[in-house]
Length: 297
Length: 255
Image (cartoon, rainbow over all chains, first blue to last red; front, side):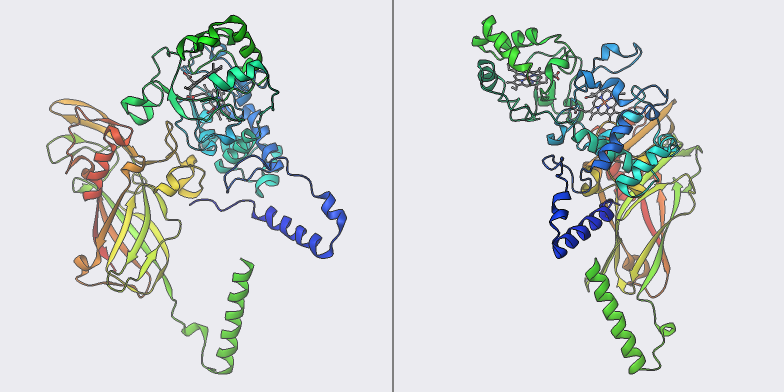
């Protein structure tokens, strides 16, 4: 049964107050109305972004309770100082993870998730790393038991969803809300690097999110072990296809590509110059202009 | 919401006034309820015998099999009268059945069935498109129930697992169906069973036999030696779904 909006209480309270303000016409009321800082961020109708939901999601994101070893949080892999990404080279050598840890910027605008686009909503994705044996390895019943023993988390759940009995749906919605608020879309001044980017890269890395999030064959020949989107569709044309990633904070998210095969941006642009091909980018000066621009994203 | 309550309140109020004022013998005790409750009872079987976890059965082509896990979704339960067009559709109709929990008598409660005559019943195996493209759901669809796929968004429609022997070879099998391509809708005629419509007048029940041998039978008979690991629609899930749509449920009683 799909959940009706859990926020109806908050909503009706809000509407009631608005009505009151409107009726009595207190200008002070209008001034107190805080500007919604999440207004421009898309979110599904049944999970609107609220300050309380984001606070709860952030607490969960940094909580080691979400792992079976009690030592791993989402931050362990999605490191804030690395643009919420990380290198799998830092993980336990027994880990079966073969794909790089993507950054989490601007995902509110993406229609699909993971390198192979196999997930359709953030709310659905969230519970996968928690349960995956190679990530946090915690069963959902155990997760609920653990989080429901923490008074702070229960209070945050009440503030966000009007119940302090934390269910899977609340964990998923709160984490999804928090992830949607990880936004970086700088307005950058014109420069030679920007022009080069528009010309050679923005066909796929387009718009404010620096990605159209479409699934396509990797321009730089991949290492060939990971068949990408083919694993989902089994269509021959999808072999080695991946979702185009956004490039926010790209200077902090090395190594690059789903398999981490490109170690730094200079090398990356050199490889693109050959593969696209873009004759212009064979000029080292132009390349460094482009790299300088990439570092400001 | 508020308006609805208000109109209901008004209606009831008017009704009460009418009752008291005009028909002084109108007492609520005499009212026949407009809606009743129906039980959908499922008796699970395997090749004609009662289904028991890990017991060995023989399928129609002589292979043996046991069942160690059988979980599946039933959804969109409807009663319909093909002549009058009268219709009952259970609200938020998603039911996860763990067949081994109580194989001989799994019960699903259908509430608010109108007191009407119905010629047929319809149900679906699996989860429809509208709920299968996000797992942000509660109740039987809560991902905590273990039926969300781990490799994509959506639900497993059926988990069927166990052991087999086939031509002297033995091993385990695992059939997980799911994805929109495995969604199947089946209808059952009350007319055929009762030689009449089902006349819903009071609480009642509809009884099904569910023989899981269907999964291995027609139209896509299973050779366990070569077909024993299915985790998507395209890898064979759709064939299992076709087999089950044809013969898993059999309507055996309605009263």
